[in-house]
Image 1 (cartoon, chains in turn purple, brown):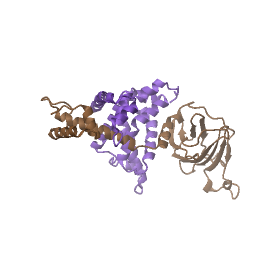
Image 2: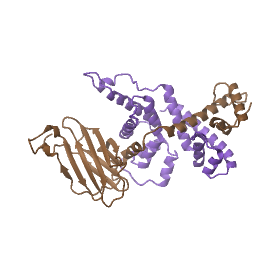
Image 3: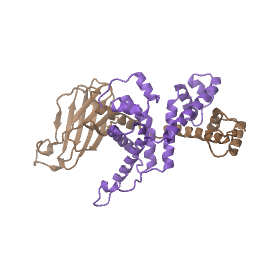
Length: 208
Length: 224
């Protein structure tokens, strides 16, 4: 990785607004672009952390495992065969790291080393429904990130706060008249639903 | 039956729907079958109603999860700096004075070689803009590299010592990452057989400090 030309403001905006596909992001990381690496982490940090938490076995050490996972991601990124499978690959790297982390924390039987332990069934495998739920949540995060900025801000204000914010306050925070929120809500939610459906459908297509 | 708009269902999921609308939606949900993604051919779209309500609940849950759990800010800084540490000429190296290497005086001054201190050295590094103290352990019978350090700014400097990445690298491979605490202290450790391990400290807006980690015993540098 050798290229560290300063990123343009447009590069950062494009990467952040999910205008960059995963293959574009991987290529930019391999070219040594710091903003691409930061966007990769931002895009997938919740998914990676959620897999760590759901895998169990690292209670209280989730942050340590998180760092170890991204070390592996960095050191192995050039070996990723299919750029389109980045998300699945990240889940696999994370699960393997959780498995080996757990092995190291438990003493192996006398006379046996980790290569023997690797013949054991992969108990870090998450139940399919758990993995599906994590992937679905990632679809939603990416769909929200793909919305135009005003829609994204509106969706976050609609759903993040508990108790929910009144529409007058949401309108004020967005610099809008309260009466214009209704139409905007409809357009943004329809757009969000469409973005989620695209991602879910794309994920269902087997990758070459 | 009513064809509900997404914004009406969003109000219902958020808990802000007027009472009569909430009752009407719940009546329709009770009549709906299992969730389905497409409108029914007969019209009415009741299974699509359940799908849309569940979708909105998933959206709310996913967005709230992002805010509730995740790595610490220190961890994110540490992870972000992984790439910076191995990029060539990412930030200029800070000029340094010649390295001062201080070994443990007990290692060889008294009764000769003391194996208990073999593989340990204390270093002080003074630069124009920083001071760095390092305690380095590279046990002769192991491949560990263990460093405890403390970073301080130069007298005329105004950059902060907290959350500065401290990274062990070997060529283009990153071995371990850490960040300093509010006192500028850090601990970083890795296992590596490589002879080209370096400690990289990345001071944002200022520069990089790179310290080669020499495994050779300072008293017996020719010993393998």
